[in-house]
Image (cartoon, rainbow, N blue to C red; front, top):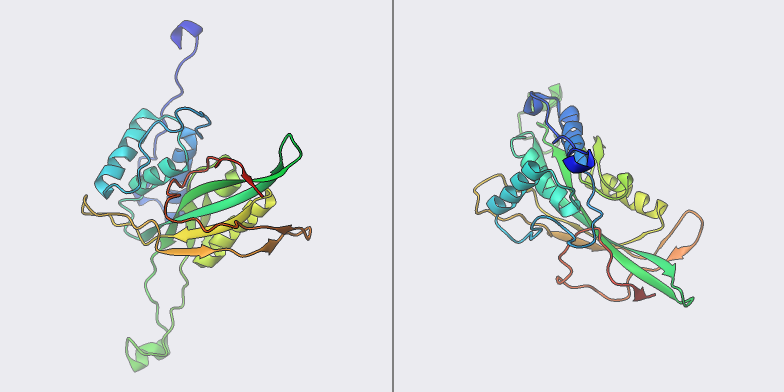
Length: 256
């Protein structure tokens, strides 16, 4: 680089008081750190780090430390590994992985209608809130069956993608379905049909040998019509657990 008159870009840094910031600012700072690494558009090798999600938590966090140290471009799985590390001390949140399988139709050079599948993953961030009680609840005692929380949980997300609309979400969504719907709508805006959505369980923080549950609930999305009235087909085949590489690289083109 020096012989070409160039220099390596500076490594991203977190704010000095990162873990003491209010949650929305903390989330924005973490996303800015992830974005500063930039998306990895290199075809071969497709990633610079191990993206094996079946490893124990300690091994995943070790990969995240390497990502932070080397500051090389990353893809979505590596961004989730890094997000797990950046949020490891956030005791006021739960971290839940969410993955998407989508398809986009296109016409090849021979004029044949085909479809290509894509996969993507982000880390949902759920604020933990204490169950606030009103005066009437306090009068009948804590734990009343009629008691309801006065505050609803808030959701955001950390991640990276070729498309900014498929990555970060600020802390403004009231439920899992609401934030996942925002991703589905973002996919529809770029011509993708969502085929499957997989949501895991809250990621543990310790011990190092603990494992992250990446798939607890898997939803197959039915036929959806876009705003222009065109129907998009979902996958004809049911994919089993062999499509475990949740990154946003393409699958080989398939017949529609």
